Length: 135
Image (spheres, rainbow, N blue to C red):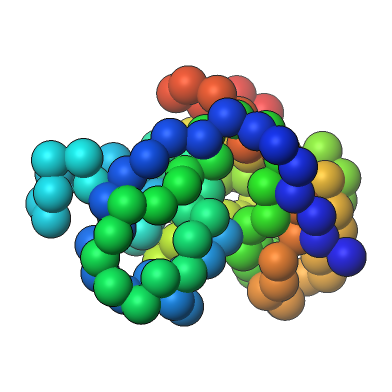
């Protein structure tokens, strides 16, 4: 069972209906608003944190930038084990196993498990700052 705890959050304006994107990773963006954010769409994007809200309209919401959070993770080719480095994937807002050979930037550590070929919500520790490209 995934869990979250107190962490450090910032406020950002969503790009619209995020009811299907709670616990997805986001990047800061001024596309929709000066203080806005959008879901990640590229495996080389540095996610600033995990979107916590599930609003049906554009509004200010919490982004967990440090600490424990639930997150949507996809285990495409590699199973996720505890303490696995995770980074943004090409699936909108999902995290995946960190691949240093692709130049990905790790933005979270897994606190749960997920079998290969599955997608689920697990607990992660959101890493601060620009993350890490190392293994």
